[in-house]
Amino acid sequence: DIRMTQSPASLSASLGETVNIECLASEDIYSDLAWYQQKPGKSPQLLIYNANSLQNGVPSRFSGSGSGTQYSLKINSLQSEDVATYFCQQYNNYPPTFGSGTKLEIK
Amino acid sequence: EVQLQQSGAELVRPGTSVKLSCKVSGDTITAYYMHFVKQRPGQGLEWIGRIDPEDDSTKYAEKFKNKATLTADTSSNTAYLKLSSLTSEDTATYFCTTGSLWGQGVMVTVSS
Image 1 (spheres, rainbow over the protein chains, first blue to last red):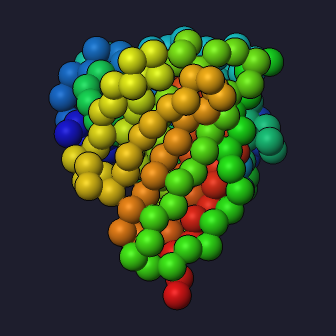
Image 2 (image 1 turned 180 degrees about the vertical axis):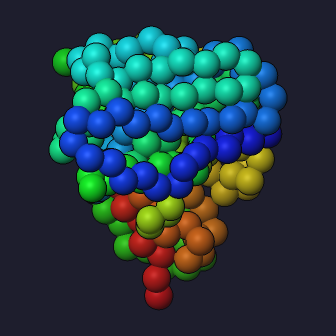
């Protein structure tokens, strides 16, 4: 199985700041990577697919980048509604595997 | 608007089985692979398996091969996850998802 190493595990930032979350795959996943946002008590919501494609309806302050084994999610101009846990997921190989999550809080 | 509607919370006894449903509204279920994902309280996401309702083909994560069974009923636009030989380790929220669409999740509690 492909291992997804996500960092940091938690993150505290101020409103308006820019934050970055990283995911490292144990092998090349050829940009078959998604980012999800999960708010407490809710289902995950797709933010980014194919490493850098913004899902319909997702604010443009979210962006994804990367290739090969290294990927990142960037959130510009942090808003209070961005408080959530973020997960990466690779879908290049079965089984699809998730990173362990990054819990984002407002400072 | 396409939605995934999951069945309600379950409290089940150890050693028994439970069957969870995921109904697609607003589109035909055969348009999607349906995946199921497990999330233990306060933990991350774990992929269980997926079914192609077009031909009932399935794929499972190795650790769920003797635990989970996926089926689909195209006449009711519904996919099902059956979990067998339940233990406390199966206490979790289970989601159905197409990737871009997610059900609301169903909490399964295994307790005597």
